[in-house]
Image (cartoon, rainbow, N blue to C red):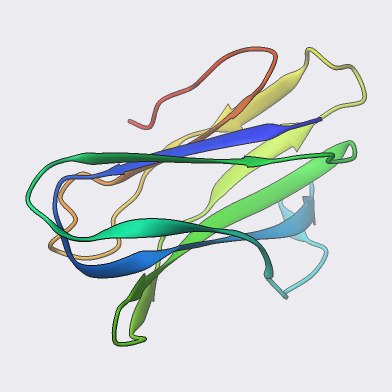
Length: 126
């Protein structure tokens, strides 16, 4: 199973990029307190224009997962975003995602992060 993550920024200042992190959960209880880096998406540096980003986490087993972004500046400073939870059942068509408004810094106005299954299309952040 695959999970597609989508987020956007209104503006960016010295944005090196986004580290995508995941941990497995079970009925809202964290199975692990350790977040694993599963990918990286380069940022736009400095931009006054809205930007859209996405990442696909592939070959997941059935279960519940939490995702978050670690936004990293060019100077190494970073900020974590809020989490998004994705539940994957063993039936291919029954993935659900909870999208949350995602804010990581005041210069990122209305940042959004959402999760969705490859089979059911995209669920945009609120």
